[in-house]
Image (cartoon, rainbow, N blue to C red):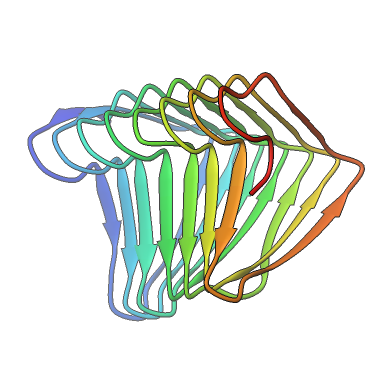
Length: 169
């Protein structure tokens, strides 16, 4: 899927979608939108060069990503709001407003993920729950991980390095 003016792919209103070894490239808005109690499963897929947030997940939706790449977005790599994300072996790189933002979201897991070269806070957790395990977050132009508004973080065997501001706040 290459060069759309709007969204690359949308999963809306109680729908489900699976992606395997797919590339979504140069979308005008988000590469992927999952909303309205929907689910998306992605394996070995790449979401590249979005002109907005790379992936948007909201309204009680769920994503399950394994071995995916989210790279070179103008805004956030992934924006999760009132939903959940299970991310395993994923790579986030060179995203404009940070790699991932969680807002009012429960049951989130990042397992063995790599995040590098964020232009803002790499991972922002706002009124959400997140487990980070065996992951590596580096080279943020601000803070590697920021938690606000009664958030809960469970961090296991992970590395945070080379941030201009604090590693974790």
